[in-house]
Image (tube, rainbow, N blue to C red; front, side, top):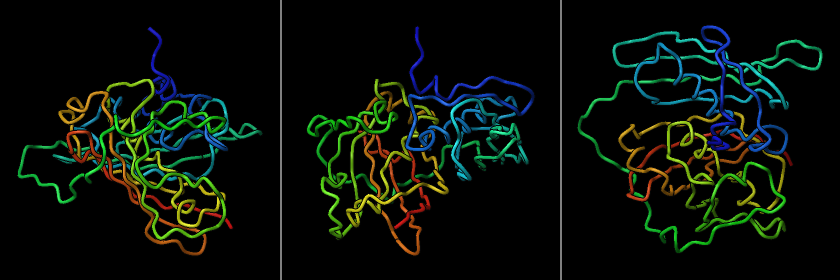
Amino acid sequence: MKPHAFDAATALDLVAPGRYAGRTSEAYWNMVGPFGGCTAATVLKAVLGHPELLGVPLSITVNYAGALAQGSFEVQLLPVRTNRSTQHWTAAIVQNDAQGQPVVTTTATVITAVRRETWSLSDLPMPTVPRPAEAQAMRYDQAMAWLDHYELRPLSGLIPQAWDGRQHDHSVSQLWMRDQPPRPLDFCSLLALSDIFYPRVWLRRATRVPAGTVSITTYFHAGEKELRETGNGYLLGQARGQEFRNGFFDQSAQLWNEAGTLLCTSHQIVYFKE
């Protein structure tokens, strides 16, 4: 059986302890490199496949130092400290440049943890929105390749239809999302989905300026139980910008499953150009 395109794009081969070989995928290509969510998921997949792994993902921060070029790369991974309940990792993606010299394109830190059943409460309930069947799936003809592998059903804050420079009064978007074709949710695909939102600066000022994520942190609130309960269902995503200043802005995002369980939250800093 042919693997899902996402699993093929994040596939890794063990080279040596803590070193994994991968290859970029045209299926998840963005403007100048792979979709950042797919790159982050590849790092997390290396952690989850490491024989010394403790627990499940708690958080990951990925810093995009430079775009990955098409071709092979290596994920280098180090478990720097293991405590009783948490484990701390550093990672880097290294790729040879045109002269054959190794260059770091991505750095990351990951925390995994043993999570125990304790008092729990959500202080951020899922917004009241139409169900997925009530929202129309969006087509992105002649757009970036990676968009073909997601089913997106926007509810509000659609990408501007006219790039007229008209300043909007907010930068909030809401949409239902899942992999296309559907696949059971796991930590890697959840991480990729947390980075699916287009730059908030485009909505706020209706001007399609060059923009790209510099660093993203995703916090996992879901465990394996919540992932199993979600299955291949839709996730509700909500994102908004918070401060746009001097060439950078930050945006926050939340993802709930259809049952209203908050699965993850993320925060990223984004570069934009006039």
